[in-house]
Every structure is written in C-alpha cells, then in structure tokens.
Image (cartoon, rainbow, N blue to C red; front, side):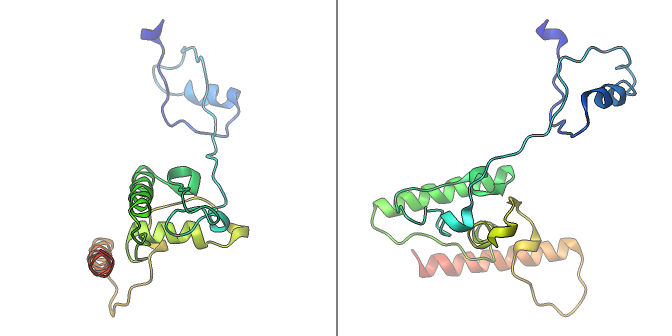
Length: 168
C-alpha cells in the first residue's frame, strides 16, 4: 500500500474536503484517484515575544532561558536556523561571562529579532525575512530590486563588521 500512497506536500488550504475532491479531480490523471487525506491549514504556535523576549532571545525574567525558531514568531527556514544559532551563541557567551549579542537592525537577523521583540502587542504576528523590516535606506534615484538587495547586503555587512569589532 505504501507504494501507492502519495502526500501532497504543502497543500495547506481552507477549502472543505468536498471542494478539494472536486478541484483535485480536475487535474489530469487524478479523475479517479482515491484520496486518503485532504489538505488542511495549520497554524504555528508562537509566544508573545514582544512581551516575553529581549533582542538577545533571552526571556525577560530569566537570563538562562533562550527561545529561537518559530516559537518566537520568526518564520522561514533560514530565519529559524539563524535565531537558533544566535540563541546558542548568546547562551555560550552568557556561560563564559561575555556580553550577549544584539545584532544591528541593518542585518536581516538583527531586524527579525528586533521585530519579534519590539512589535506592537495588539498587532503582533509572525514575520519572515523581508526588506520591509529593515531600516529605510537613503538613495537619490529609483533603483531596481537587484540593486536594492545589493545595497542592503553591503550595508548589513558593514554594520555587522563594525558591530563585531566593537563587541568581540
């Protein structure tokens, strides 16, 4: 039986099962398919990070408790991996008695951590990496997406380099 079952990866929908059946049967080759399970929406659980977390990803009332990943309200594979790395580095720095990192908002990870720890509580929703959470850039002319991305990357690299020089 396992060789005849296929999973529709990423098929998250609010469509009712009969409507899913109808739509899926419109796909050539699936007119007579038997569906063991239909898609459904899932919602990731997350804490109220603006109330509970510092930009270092530490809990506000416990220095030794760190959070990372989707539970913080960061979305996307890279954001989740990056927050895990930052939380781990900060835990190691805490154990060594070193100051913890709060990355510059010009970096995407710094901007994500700032967003989840400073967002307005009444509107707080998970966020993934995007240019909209980075500080505005000053430029005189209209620029394309690729050039804008390059400018953001260069600014982030400079900001991180300066930050790490000041905070070894």
